[in-house]
Image 1 (cartoon, rainbow, N blue to C red):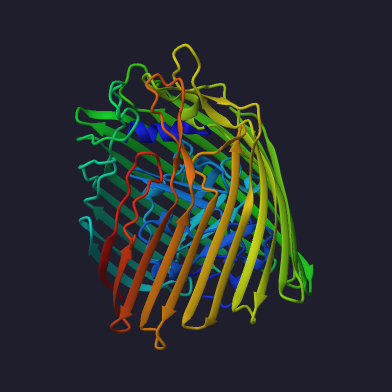
Image 2: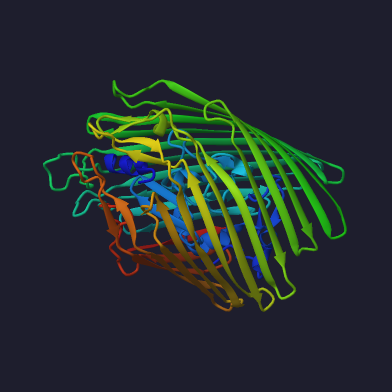
Amino acid sequence: MKKTMISMLALAAASPALAQADQDQTNPGDAILVTASRSGDAVRADQIGASVTVLDAEALDRRQTRRVSDILRDVPGVAVNSIAGQGQVRIRGAEGNQVLVLIDGIEAADPYVGEFDFSTLLADPAARIEVLRGQQSSLYGSDAIGGVINYITLSGAEAPGLSARAEGGSFGTYNGNARAAGASDTFDYAVSGSFYHSDGTPNARGGARNLGSESVTGTAKLNWMPSPNLKLSAVGRYSQLDADSNNSELNPASPRFGTIVDSPGVRFNNRAFYGLVSAELTALDGRWTNALSAQFADTTRKGYNQAGLDSGDKGQRYKASFVSSFRFGTGSVVHRITGAVDLERESFRNITPSPFAFQGKRDTDNLGLVGQYELTVADRLSLGGSVRHDDNNRFGDPTTWRVQGSYRLPTDTRIRAAYGTGVKNPGYFELYGYSDGRYIGNPNLKPEKSEGWEAGIEQSFGEGRATIGATYFDSTLKDEIYTTYPAPIFVATPGNRTTDSRQHGVEIFVSARPIPQLRLDATYTYLDAEENGAEEVRRPKHLGSFNATVLSKDERFAGTLTVRYNGRMTDITFTDPTYASSPVVSLQEFVLVNFNADYKISDKVSLFGRVENLFDERYEEVFSFATQGRGAFGGVRVAF
């Protein structure tokens, strides 16, 4: 099945403001995004032909979000798989490594595996999330087949003040964060840090070993305007995750072969540094902007057993971009033309202490040229198109493109559509990875290519107090990378499929705020994803969520009920000792119910609490990985 490399690694190592609406807004279309345009301009959601979701700072706070992957379960078209040491997010049936992840505009995927591990992303005290679905390679290049997730920490101008939070609860959990931010006429800053510790629970069926973890993140964000037309910015971020993990049973004589078992001494460490500096110059009364930026990502992953270092890898990404955008028009007609140049180098190195593993350093260089045109007419019609050509020293030179449009009728009915293409380059592990007796990389892999379209309709009622929308999407993936087991040794190695893979489905959302003290949000996704005629693993056909927030009249008390449904899905087992076959099993559907409450003692001090998995649901998101039961947590928050 598709990309079982990630599954093998796991086995071997082992709301309220739903987007189409921003919770601070009465009208869902008032939500804004910066991810949908390379110009850097904020674009209203109802002027974008693509499917978008915005989760704002209030949504994360009301939901008492501690790990970002949790709240992503409430986004239409998004499926989440979380196990100890790994968090995968898929959009519209695409693989986790086909989703581009940005943190404050910085490409955050681990260059070695070509994917971002969401288990490393703690929620900051003040942040927002933009999710852009559909093929976006014409803007961002490789990795954006399924879409883009942009996690953005708020600036000192957007959220000034001092705040701190302390929390404790079940499973030996304690965590907290602190933030200091401020702004003047020409300068703003925001510095924050988060910490999370848990003694954990067993993740092996019938296991007794609790898997503990500790996470630390720190972020600094600075903006300075030395003159009215010049803005200088800098972002720095550090994250580290230390956690226990379990391996799969490798004894062919054991009836539990291929399943996760207690593995004393097995643990891992993930560490990452991110940085970005930029300068933006405006001219012609703000109609022409030019921005120059440089960013880097440096990641290191290490796995340990009782004897010491067992596996590891390092990856670096260095990227420089120049973006020039010009706006013109008269009256209600506005044109925007944007050009961008992206120069990127990715470096990778395997540090696994094995004489059979290739431990040399490899580099991939890429030059991307982007052109984008956007038109808005009277806040009702918007049209756009983008094209990108990549010059890559390893994988050839693809050209990707996208067109989209949106129109709002006088009846407050909005219709929209988009068509686009995408590309995903193979990761270093797929090319050169090695796991003794279990996996061999393939340096002859070709990039995966995708094309797809979507069409949607939205209807607003009561001057925007309620909105309902539906979207149909259809995508085709070519040259899909999958895992083969060639005779006579049947050791896993990746290859490109000669057949196409299809993903199509429907996304539905409802968002309503009938009175200021009540907010209701619901989503439903139907997905049909097939690879070579078979159902893709870890893609539930049915996903849904419901969120209700109730506030007291004086808004001192708030309670939020969250219900998340994950339908039946398949997974691959690796329970054949010869590796000649990969049995597929069905994982049962499950429903997770959370309840959160918050009470303001004063304008500066709040008490809060929540219960996760209220009905103690027992379920598996990945074959043989047990999950956490019911837990209760509470704490205090202060803000000045």
